[in-house]
Amino acid sequence: MSFNESHYKMDEDGFKSQSEAERAVENGHLKVLSNGNLYDSQTGQEYWPDGTKKG
Image (cartoon, rainbow, N blue to C red):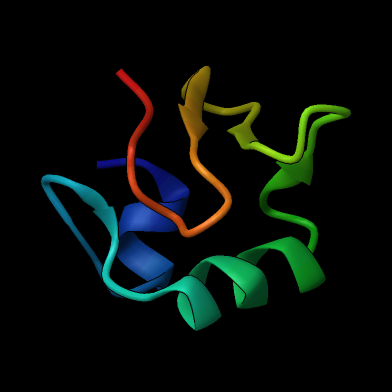
């Protein structure tokens, strides 16, 4: 289980809400990429801006 999975509301599709993903960004646990997507440097997972998993 990754850090984000144990600290934020997530399911198999990513973050359960955009506000939960935004909270992870504010706390420094996700980075906003130049294309607007979100990146978890611990797992290498990329998320859409709404917090759902990309690909």
